[in-house]
Image (cartoon, rainbow, N blue to C red; front, side):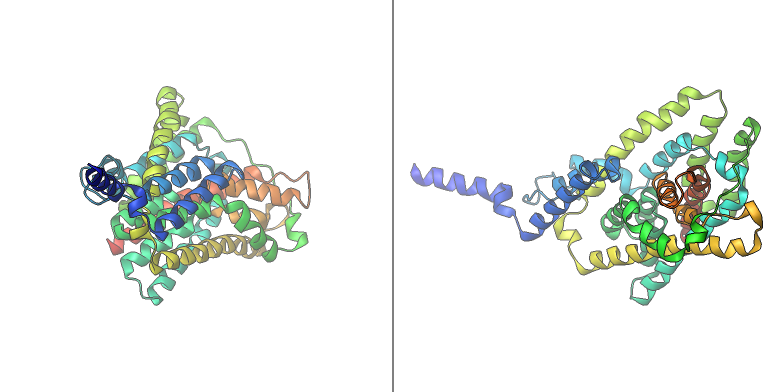
Length: 381
């Protein structure tokens, strides 16, 4: 009888997490706890980091293969939820919600700000070239480069098409740098600007009519989709969501897109992306290199936006000049990057409110990252 219970206990332990635990699982669980701590204590993108952090913990609970509980096991519940990431239909739903929440007025009132959003996308292509030089395949390099846009849904969409095996590392990297915008960007902004430039006051944005707001998403979808049809899933949903918001006659649909839909998809995408970071698939040299390249891409994107404003100001006069502190907002981390512009500007002049000006390149960055994704897909996929 004693031997029977002993064998039963040993068999139970062999199926438990304690019997299958490795140092890799422990490391990843600690990373998940750090993500949760950053989201709760520091309030760095808590809507993203808390689900991702908890997903990392779930994905790294050790288990025996064949139990159908892991995100990569066919028939597992997590595998079904992960299907929306693998097939890329979660990101367009996120873009639908972003469009329904976004006010493009700042960009419409000062169209030249779209150039800042375009300049910031240089980080994507700089990282792409660097990844190629380091030995990644063109498709892998394209997926890694998109991290520089600071756009998690776009990074997931691109990696699902170009480098599915790297999706976990790329997605976690993209969302990590989105959350760390208030930490990474200010030192770059201060290093690249002079005290005089930081005090530049910009002309107040003009009032934008309802007609302009309605025509904007219609004109943009025609222009961008004809230019890069491969970006249609993201761009189409972005501008459709914005049309729902600005039309004035589809308020219920806009509220649903910007509320329940985007909240549900954010939970699912965060949890499953986190769960995809199983130690056996995630802890390898390539993952570390992806994080390094992602940081490089993000730094280049921020610097490109700031430096472009400084260059552009050479051709502008008087109150048409642009404060370079809004150059960082060319990445698509909305609205955190714009908020960083405001905070940094008020350190030098408490009465200089840059938020509305920074929202112009910030929303342009959302469009720019989707267009850049379409360009990469057009010649890589």
